[in-house]
Image (cartoon, rainbow, N blue to C red):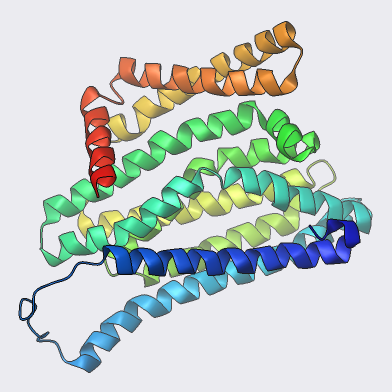
Length: 348
């Protein structure tokens, strides 16, 4: 709305939109809380046996590391905003060019990479009470089941998303944002997509286990790899912003592996990688040629980039689901559970 007044007003409008969105989200959460919170009869809930100071200590043991993790993540974004354009200039770009390339990288490539995170971030939030509940019941089998299911869903959603982002990188960047050149860095970022999504899910698991400090420590450790990679790789003439993408992939990889290692140490969880990783990976790799063939065929038939990309997207998803059934990566039982969960939410 403010764009016609000038770039400065447009920037203010974008920032104001974020504030309005956060207020609206908070209002929605508060409304849902008062509508859906359970009401217990008087006397049903007994007073807690735990002293107040001990309860507060337990709360802060979780809240402080979580807050620090978000603070560090935001600080790292600020470091990236300074370091990446600086190193792009070292690779031979002028200041205006470096700023433009950085804006495309953050505003386009990373934005598309984070879209599947809608699933994993929501799941990570839901995992905290789910895993905490299983831990409180001292039911290690339930802890294992919930952790493994979360990892499985993350890979089921993350692997095909990575293939789609790699196969249709230029097309998506061009159709949605008008900058197909951002697809070069998106294609590399997509390699780290599954690790980014696993990082988000595993962070929720560790926080649910009451080990919120571990994701914070792992993030700090991985940031050294990322910042070092940004400094050296971005400054290379033949890489530039693609070197930045490689550095971010390394950071996602290190954080995800460290989180999964901590989960295994804490819970002795040994996921069934054949079902959780190999089968979805085979299906995701198999959908790649379908996406490319569909895109080329539809473009030759319709002459429309939008129609070809949309058709290729849906063809790829259909192929992925079919291959999952053929490999046993997903069963009728999974669909029945999904339908039951949907019906339960609808009834609520």
